[in-house]
Image (cartoon, rainbow, N blue to C red; front, side, top):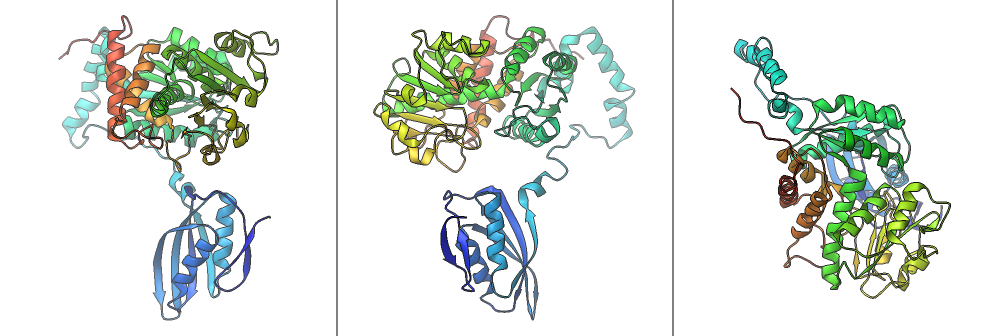
Length: 492
């Protein structure tokens, strides 16, 4: 293990690895310790965490005795290995003993993150007779006669299915449906927190396109929208296209459309900072998968005219016989001149770099060849395409998916508001104009008096975000002929 040496409070030495300067709550641990009765023990404990590069967030005395203390120390680390190093540093403190280590992220997931709660009281005989039998039969019969009322009289009008096959989960790859569930639960929790939408994870134990399409088609009557999640390309394209054709509710692939909305919104504001126009800039997108394809499609829809896409084959060119049908289509829409080369070649003179490929596909120095006042968005997850901290040496505006740096481009800025607007409009489908409306509304949340190189995209906790996006999407949906279901009148 390479690194420098730090002195712990008891003068022993432990190696310290050079790592990023920021710790994260996702690697937060609580360590239960016993210490002697020396009043300076707590100070030595805190110093040990700091010496190991951790950040103390709480120290709680669990038990105090004449001969010593039992203490819970909560601290954050940079990664799992760093957590172990922090524990080792604590155990090395004189007269301090580690009794138990709890990973707070795993504790949060115990039992899952979701539950079902009733919206109506069930306290009396009258409550039961209306919510369930016999009163519920009247509502069922009314819906059989007027199926258009299902959205209004059931959860369908406010419920979204979060559907995955576990084939492309975060940056973890094909880990399967069971392992994907914590992500899908988290997605559902975000729907509720930011859009007041009831969502439910549907993890399918198949990667067969026909089976997935048919399964979603069968469960669709109980949902007002379908959110496809973490399904690998190119299958995700076919699944989405077929479901859109078959269903009368909106189908949204967040890895594609949610990402594209957020990128376009951030880019609009970044270009305001550097005083450039979308129609004039040269854009390079790294990654020709689901996210990259959707980003390019929306950029072209918004007016971009000069886009190149790079993937493992190099710059995607229409005359490259190695390309899959999906990548060939992307090449035809972006590179009619059949330009070839690798990513550093494509970046020469480019105004914008958008990365949705893989970790560290280029060194930061490769950005030096970009145009003046460049915009760089490395968003590969969990490790960006290029180090966003070092990228600041070469770019005027940098944004990434990281929560520990300015300008986090996070899909939660889009999908809750998008679905809120679609559900409120009783939309039957999603159209490009709705995606553009969502991106423009998201960008507009950042006012002229707020905009700067470190603030081109609002916080996910800004209450104006979901409301603005939802209103824009609802208005756009209602303005599109045939995009929404007829709104039935009230029934007794």
